[in-house]
Length: 133
Length: 133
DNA sequence: TTTATTAATAGTAATAATTATTATTATCAA
DNA sequence: TTGATAATAATAATTATTACTATTAATAAA
Image 1 (cartoon, rainbow over the protein chains, first blue to last red):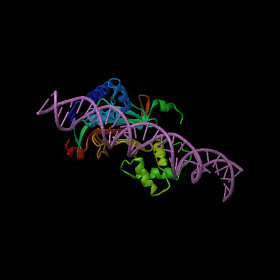
Image 2: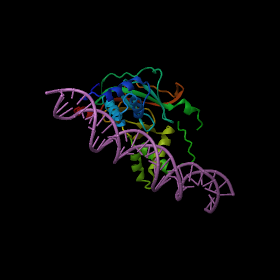
Image 3: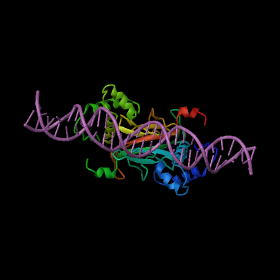
Image 4: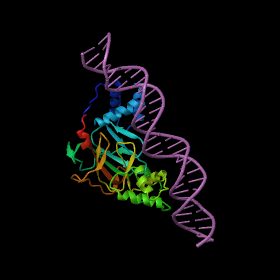
C-alpha cells in the first residue's frame, strides 16, 4: 500500500486528498468537486475523477459503491463496517463494531494480496421500515 | 424476506430469476438480457432492469457493485465472501470461508432490520500483481 | 369460455455518471 | 532559467440506467 508512482505532486491532488480525509461522510466525485472548488475555483471535474481513481487504486482512499448509480469515496482506507439498505440504497457507517471483529492481517489469500476488508450488512433501514409496502 | 407484492407473475420475471439462479458468476443486467433473450427474443432491456431491481429489493437476489460502472447481480441472496481488486475492479467469490466465520442472525442493529451480510476483502488480484507498476 | 381491468411489457427517448480527448499549464530536473 | 512532459482544464463522447407511453397479456369476474 501507499504505492504511489506519481511523478509530480500537484496542488489539485493534494487538496482533493486533504479534503476527503477531513470528511466522515461518503462523498461522491461531484461532492468533492464542489468542496475543492471553493479553494481552487478553476479545478476541473475530470481532474477530480482521475485523482480519486488514482488514490483509490493506490490504496490511499477507498472507492465504494452503494445501491445508487454514482460511486462514493471514503477517506479512511482502513476496514470498517457499513450498513446498506436494500430498498433505498442508503449506506451508513456502523456505530459500534459487532463482536467478534474480523481479523485481517496483511497477507495472501487465493493468490491475492489482501490490503483490507469491508464488512457490509444488508437490510432495511429505519425509514424504509416505516413505509408501507 | 421473500416479501413480494407483485400482483401478476410474468414469463419474463420467472425466466430472469431462473437464469440468474443458474449462474455462479456475477452478471450485469446486459448479461442477463443476452441470456434471457435466447428464450424470450422479444424481451426488453428495460424489463430486465426493472425485474432485477424488484427482485433485489425483495431480497430474492442481491445487487452488487464492484469498482466498475455497471451493477452486477448475484443469484444467491445468502451472505458469502468476495474478493475485490482495487486495481482492476475484478470481483470473485472466495473459495473457502476464512475462520472464524461471521455470524449474522436475523435481527435488529442500529434500528435496521438485518437480512444478510457481505464480507468483501480488498486487495490486488494475481494478474495485477504480475503487472509492473 | 369470454370479457374487462389494469399490471407489466416492448420499444424508445431522456438522463446522469463517467471516461476520453486535446490544447494548455505548471512541476521538476538539469 | 529553461526544457521536457506529467498533469490539468475544458469539453466532447460514451455508457449505464431510468423515464415514458402505447400495447400486450395476466388475472378476476361474468
